[in-house]
Structure formats: structure tokens, C-alpha cells
Image 1: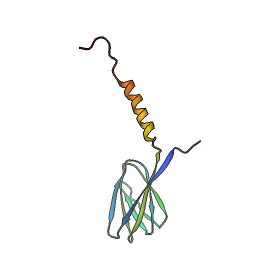
Image 2: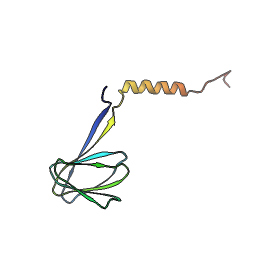
Image 3: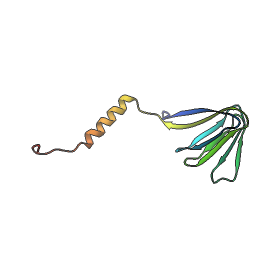
Length: 109
């Protein structure tokens, strides 16, 4: 069986005084880079400290705030289905349009 997922990662550099507010539409993983991170979530009384290299799952449609103990990078990643190649996308779209086209009967008016 082939893996039909691909990983997407975003890298952000936070300064010590920065606070990054995140409200993501899908589940993501937050990973601390070279610095310790503080994470708090809306509706959660617990605050989370991530050491460099540690990760935390970010729930979809939930506000998260992230700050760094010192300047450094953070990684935010998610797994997503692989996209069809452009040619396959165009073929699928053409088939869909052909099926959706109204059937014409009789003489044009």
C-alpha cells in the first residue's frame, strides 16, 4: 500500500517578546526548535512548556497562543492528502463538467 499523505511544515522565528496566536482549521503539530516554548489554549486551564525538540498536538478550531523563552524557530506541521497532478485534476474537472452539463432536447429557441 502506498502512503497517500504528505507532510507540510511551516517554520516561524519568534523573538522573546513575540506572541503567536493560532486558530487552525485542521489538526497540526507544534514542535519547539532551539528554544523553550510556552503554549496556552482557549478553554484549557493547563499551560504547556515545550523543551527544544518536544511537540504538542494543536486541536483544530481552537485558539492557541505560543511564546518563546528566547528567540528561536518553531515548526508547525500537518499531514495532508497528496494532491493529484495538474493533468489528473484537469481530467477530473472535465469529467465533472461533462456530467453536470444540462441535456438539451429539441430545437434551440
